[in-house]
Length: 268
Image (tube, rainbow, N blue to C red; front, side, top):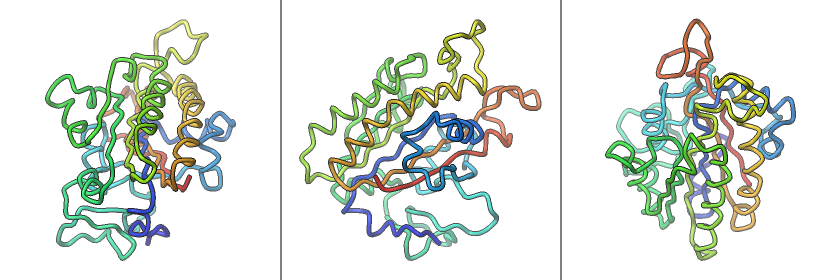
């Protein structure tokens, strides 16, 4: 069972849900063990990411699952109760600590409970430039995407955090907030986070450097959310990616390094 009773959180806390798009589990722990992610390390229990399985191998299906309550699942073979879930008959992964809602996704469920819902997009599935890139943003009352928050911008996380901070300033203190951010910096291309690289090729090393950059920007957001209201944070990847393992490159394949993701949740 969950040690967190999400029913007691909803209505009393702001919620910050950050998806570190494409972050590999091994990369997350390497960066953590080398003190490259001190802002995240402040909140990660025992200084080690939880090892979990993603419900999907790429962004689009993974986020549909997340928003219905199917967050990455702990790898040990038990039935693990979920933090929150859209109600359906026969579910074996809910318990008395699970927040159940009748809506199809948690964004609508938070809105019904009086939350302001905000999305700051990163990868292309959030770019609002076509029908498929509008599906997720359209679920939120407030949504943002621009090229400077996308995968091709080296300063994407800084720009996403600036948008988030500006949004916070517009909300009354008593207004509860569900803030979702899809971090794009870990997705390809990320080779440019290694200043010394001569080849324009992504690697484990360049994703580690990208994660260190992401962490350097998140500290301001954590502090601002903490000062605003009691906040519960979910921090995880939606999938990993291959850098040549067994001949695979990229994701959308059911490889171990794609399906195995880092996960943490904590109070700010």
